[in-house]
Length: 408
Image (cartoon, one colour):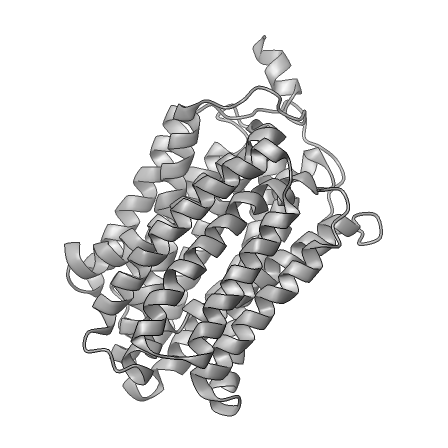
């Protein structure tokens, strides 16, 4: 196939299975991305919030993460829109993957040297903007290059990378390096390395002519499956945010764990192993059978059980049981979610933009959940109420995904 033909086929549905090497580099790039997000969210940002204002640490943490998530909600569709129209000789997605990683690393550098809450907020906004752009480009690589029958397998790897990013992020910033400054610097180096290796070691789709239709509007009437899938993705992520965002504070302030950071690391380890098992097992099964929705129903049910266990029995022992349940549920969901979400995209020429709109469902819970969590903790029974709401959100996701008609 000639270079000119390759440039002209940037919108075609891929039919040739991707190789293991390509999947490996995508995995490592996503690993760095999620580590750069979750190590700060799980450990560094809560520690920094407590350092700046111990009495109002939950409020500070919620404000910083909420503003950053709002930035991500705007940036991800925008970068997706721009990458859809990029005709660079370096490719359609790669420039945004590497550029996003560099901006995110710069934001982590700002956080490392932040002396007050304002600078901390600015740094996290830069991180969310850069990593959000990287996410838009990497996610679009799936429908660009992966055939539909292989997408749950690739989705499972992405889910595992998210899990490992969470676990390894906690390991890096609690065991391998010490201090907030060193933790942020380590995250910056890792995310840039992952992006650089992916860009250098994999081919990128190229287009010769920018597609038209410069709009962000997606008609709900004409794209009902897209809307239902978006809603299900939002509610799964909302339930996960309710269950995990304040986990460190749950261990320290409610459970009174003697070492909350070590306890969080152990929970993330259990969560991670179970997530990997769920993603690999059910992702492969979904690709083999061609069925997607039953696995979302299974995932939502298991995640709801995990949250309800903590609502009924909010103890350290219950957390040790709930963590692997939540992990296997979320791993199963992520394995099939990539397949479902990429199968309901409205137009091939707008893949990254439309996936960016879908990724708003990742960022929006980070804006809404901190505000709602504050209200829930104060008015709906504390952490018992919070975990009950988490279970309800995931069950709503199962109902919404049932409305998708074009996917079995």
